[in-house]
Image (tube, rainbow, N blue to C red; front, side, top):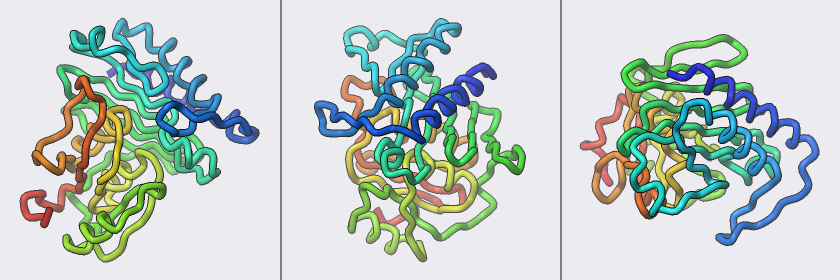
Length: 252
């Protein structure tokens, strides 16, 4: 679906990398989170290039009032630079996230980590794929029983560590941005726990990628998969896991 969107993600990645070597200006948004020129320029590029599809775009850097978007049935949900703190700290673990939402659920998604030369994508019913310097392969996390828990480097918490320990994870790793979803999808991690705030654009592309690779993501309170285009764009707490783990067997 929309092969052109993969090229758009690469274009945004190239733009970000051009800034990455020289970025010095960092501003703070109203919620205290950092934003750079790369965030805004990537957002503008993606919205402009996706216009050919005819679907509206909701981006972290270009939010749309709920009174307008509540009637959207199909739209693009974009995080033009996920992991801005990773970008600022030069860890390389930042991504471009692009997801297509239909009736509240992601049906297509891209997670591109330009500094790591990694591009992952998935389409509902057609599988998940990973492109690296070594080539392209299909992702299936039902084949590797990883006992690694992953969580955010900037949001590491005792609650996450204890959750991993209760559920058989032998160690935990901190990983930036939506790369945590990629780690599970490729079988390098078993669980991802998020007990602090995140927004819809942080998870949509990772959700379809993980689901098509055989994994799952569930909201902590309801044990149901996240939905999108809510009035409140907050996700709430969630757990994501590989296809080798039955979420019903976990100690929540």
